[in-house]
Image (tube, rainbow, N blue to C red):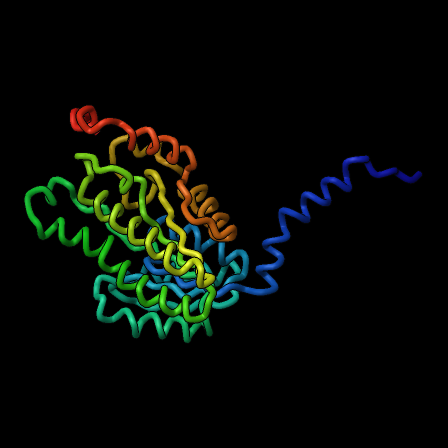
Length: 274
């Protein structure tokens, strides 16, 4: 006895096709993705997703053992190509050679994902410029050095996506983390200007603003059990890169939260314990 298909099966088939369309296209044409700061928690989760899609990956971080483990995991998950370099990205003089080597290894570049950064110690940064200066260098100076080279490379070729982790902390300075926040505020402003300069050249410049996320960097922080799940954050970021968004808050509720915080009058804001 034959069984007639239910009336909604064609609809479900169409939905499955739409959901898988991007993944299938990317598997046929693996993208060349450079990840700078590849052992950060958010970057690792993004790398896992890209590896499962069969992308080509070049990974850079300073911790040799962790980086080798991330690269090995990416190969196991199905990345089409994986190479890596151990490098201290604070050393800006080495950036041109490092980036040129990475792009040569990938045979081009479709996406550069910058995930380098440190939270630092706010109390220590209040007492000594050495700590404050290190936070500012790692979170602002080093990324700008990388972005200047990468932006010129992509603009000359009229293609590419530069996706950069900033932070909601950069939307307004708060006493609890204003050194870190100011480094991210500067980075976000730089990205906005860079986007204005090279978007017309066919290059996407994406500012990613996560709220607090459960990673090694935030482990032990007050309220960390309520922070966003890193894998969900990574999935949102990967999708936003696919869609070539300009600015993405993740989770999205932070766009509303920071919108409210930014309009609080200064005479009131300075009395708040934030």
